[in-house]
Image 1 (cartoon, rainbow, N blue to C red):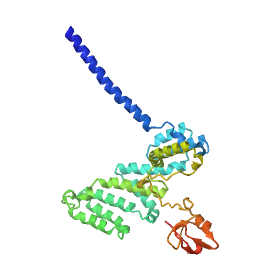
Image 2 (image 1 turned 90 degrees about the vertical axis):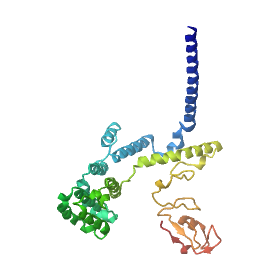
Image 3 (image 1 turned 90 degrees about the horizontal axis):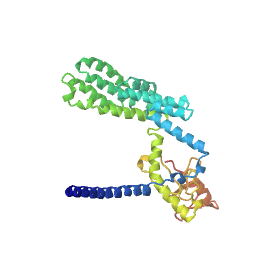
Image 4 (image 1 turned 180 degrees about the vertical axis):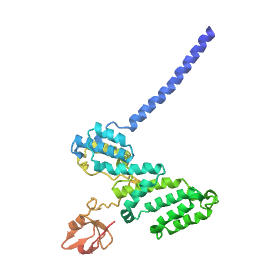
Length: 333
């Protein structure tokens, strides 16, 4: 009995020791969460940025619906529209419905809908320097080659579709025509075995998505995804700045309206177009206030140039060179 009691006592002590270690680890996790997550994230942006809370909710719901449509989750988007009483126009839905219908067909290796769409939009695709239609025809030709010698005549007949693309894709067409020599021996063991690579289907899906979105005026990436990723980068910095502003009572530094108190680097993936900020007025240039290059090589905005004119002459704010304001040239990035 005494031995059993001792074993029980030792086991209880071991359990208590293990529980103490686990409890210590769990408590550290809680502290780490409290340290890295701020419950007052909403306070970073003033309510004055939005017209009203209803407007804020409507914008968020619309962004979520657009994201769901773009990801092909059509039934979920429709359910959200019904539950939130959000009225989405059919003209807004139509591009996403068409895009997802064609992408689903491509995932099933059905080129018909994509080819039909590319032919109907041929002129606009050419204006974008797109090779989508050629790549679709090439993939259909490769499928015929994969059918073996029985499909040789059909493949030769289909090769006529390459005629409009001969000038721009001559080398690729020559490769496909050369593969016909090895058709009876089997392309799998020939120098043209790369034509049968399954990665061509993933490539055509990416090409179609990019060109179709460009043609339909849609972004390739979901705006909600981009905004969320940017927010994850920007929020910690903005929270620190807000804390410093409140601590030093500099409430007028950040008005929250269409501006940030500091520049936040989001990385190359968030670069969509060139931006120039005037080093004098610290404002982003626009079509009405374009960047102007002075004779000395320095660049300022037109509004800054007009403010620096004194007696019909302009003295560069960065070097002592005097010049005629009319000699400044507009720069287009």
